[in-house]
Image (cartoon, rainbow, N blue to C red):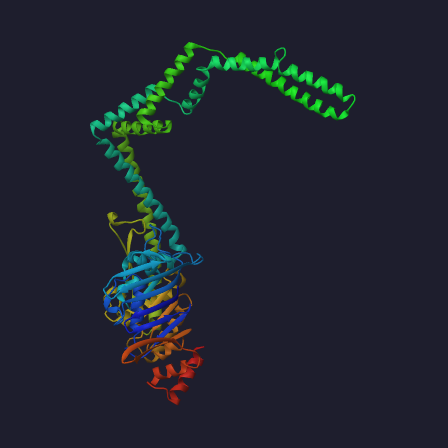
Length: 559
């Protein structure tokens, strides 16, 4: 949703700010006042190619800034595709985007203060805004978005088969990838195969075990220094337990303190503490003696351990630097050898897996197609009903679901889903992009958007030509439909119809004036006192007493 747009030096606009409300915002003004310049500014934020002619005469550059809250940031699910729907309860992300275009045509963009490319700007902003009436920006004129829109509208009736299809598509892709890998491995060069066989043979000759290298390193450190360890234990035991050793000295100290304690009891705690230390020394002396007795030196075993360590270190030099790398190298080599040695069997198994996955995928695609086939006419009927509200005669929408060739299936679609426009009963339907009238295509878009409601991933809709050639009862119906749409979307409408303007939650007036002989466009938010004057002008061209009374009547009826 657009929170605010600030425009500077765009066409005739020196400086303007637009703060559209969450519901229906209208822009009105005389023809040629500069309403189109505001849409041009919005398109710059959507990543459109910069045009230096849009820079106001005499200005060095133009700047357009916007604060936009998006609930479907551009990091889409790769399988969902454009037009996919994001849950409405997702916390919106705030984006502050700026686009600057110099009079020489150089363009710069930022997103949240960081430099960004125009492509990144388009990816972040364009999916959240639909310029209905601007053919190049209408997402609904792109047939590849129609499948996701139909799925979103159909909701639960399509979501389960769609999820099953996507899962089956991934499984089929994995099965095909495994078959390709088996076939590729079977064609491996002789040199590579020889290398794999050599690596497998060398590692298996040593047959290293997990954790063996670490255990052997510790054992060798003890075995190679057995004599030093035994001597250290013996010396320690002697220093503690031999005559005149630490334990005898400690015993003498305890006896002396206890003798003194007979005359001064404050010495007793020291005697007690030393006695406790004596217990510890006895334990250490006994354990050290046991450790020394347990050390055995076996030259043959030491030689075997050293030879084993040398073999393991040889593997580390060849495939390391870690034992994990050695094990990994064996797995790769074993797989390469097995793929060639067992190529025929593996290929047979892989082809069988592909066939089974393709059968499951075809069944899932049939179920999805059936669910869409059931939803498509209901969606088309609902849109056609809205088109009837807009008094578009007998014209209607057709939702066509056609199977695609298997090689064209994607994770999102096994079908071609396209919305077609049928001008009247008995007439040939045609793609939406081929509707000639800008006002007509905008009203079709409006009907589709109303039916989509909250299922639409696009937050903001901007209508430019929706009221072209409209008047009388059709104008009233158009205003009603726009008001309905504003309950689920942020709607911005450039309009010449008073019937639409009176339904607005926010009403902006675009004026063109002259300042020192230079034309300038200004934008102002009308309050409750100013709105009747502008509505009266739209009704009769001037604010007469009769037109003002009519304007106030329309405003009162609208709210």
